[in-house]
Length: 141
Image (cartoon, rainbow, N blue to C red):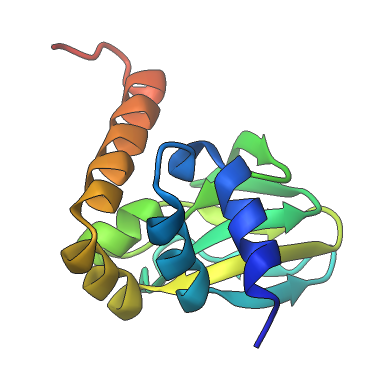
């Protein structure tokens, strides 16, 4: 098991979790697993089962969809939140462009957590909405 206090600090810095209470952050921190990847490792692959959420704590990665580069990720960035909600296949491939350390939360545990802390569900929906507005060709209200 990793240091829960360190996980709490990292989670607090993430845009996704900034508005959450300490209690909610502690609950999420208890579900996290620290994972590491080498430069060039595929962290998740487009089309694979979406079974986890990741929050980068160190390092960089690239997001690609259908072979096209979409954006770069660095400390504090996260991915996999869509799969946490719907369990559908990954919509993009994430590849480490440097050594990466991340916090990982499995879908099953996260679903239980959202049932216990509705504020987490709301914050996640707000983050998803923000992301959709950025990438949608012509979002409507």
